[in-house]
Length: 386
Image 1 (cartoon, rainbow, N blue to C red):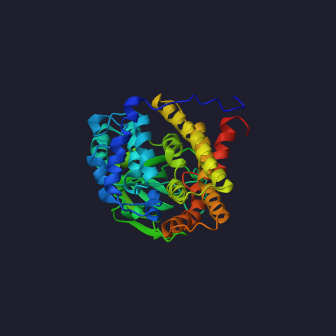
Image 2 (tube, helix red, strand yellow):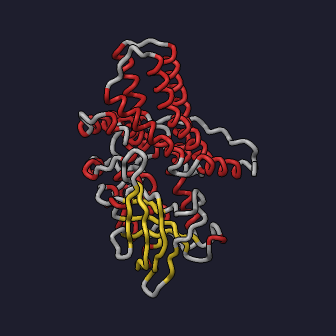
Image 3 (cartoon, rainbow, N blue to C red):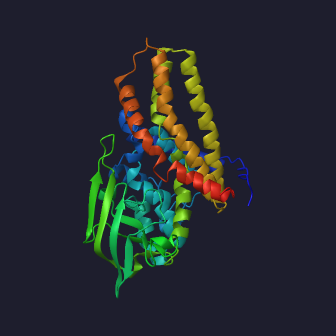
């Protein structure tokens, strides 16, 4: 095993994919006109079903999936452009986020033909919303210690257990859950499978959890003798860990890991320019944001290139996720210091509300998609350091 991470080859966006950008920006201008920055800063948690359906009508969902299933038949670079513009504008992405980013590609890769035909066209139209059931109470970030169990029955599966931090479960039509179908928690990765099923089935109880910013997108989901059909299984029984690992590569590698604070940064920079502020602390903060964003964006684009070549991205995605969330969390502090350095400047109420929100919510950036400790553990194992 190499002791150093192999260099990521630089990648650019092909002209045919870059050409999508004006179209996406025009769509966003139309749909986000007059939306204040403190609302747009909630992009990750912003759930707007009609916005997601409008994206579907525009053909901007499931861009990388084949056209025969309703997808765009485009490259990972095309999706990079779409996601980058959505997050930069602060679009409400939570409705379609999971299906577009990972569950759609998961079904395309591991699902049966019947599952592809049933789910993917609906996802592409923004007609169904998905959530992911991975984390469990008392398990921390140890995803392998899953206790939620699906037991085979004559007609399919009987499900019992609990999931937590399941984003937008109360608004979703379906859940993709990692469950144990054999063995016990001591077996770790063995005996894990993935099931996809309706959140409206009898025996499913969903409890929203209010976060530090007052939003309620996290949920606890309880399963009590939930009867599932046999075709709820996605992929092969017992292959859940390998499938989840592949799925998390999509979740951890994209521009969503570097743009969570970008509406705040753009709002602050716009007000600094409008006021004609030229101050060393302000200039240093702006330089830090621009410099680190440029490097992280290049890294994320390189991972998109690997995805396009169907190469494993586990290590590189973990690296981007770790460094990206560190950057996202640092931005509100840099901006706060810069504002304190120019007391003669009076920030707008919108900027202050946006700064307050991002400051409160930023600790969660390094939790979603796996903690920084988990990312570094993956890196250490992959590089032969442990």
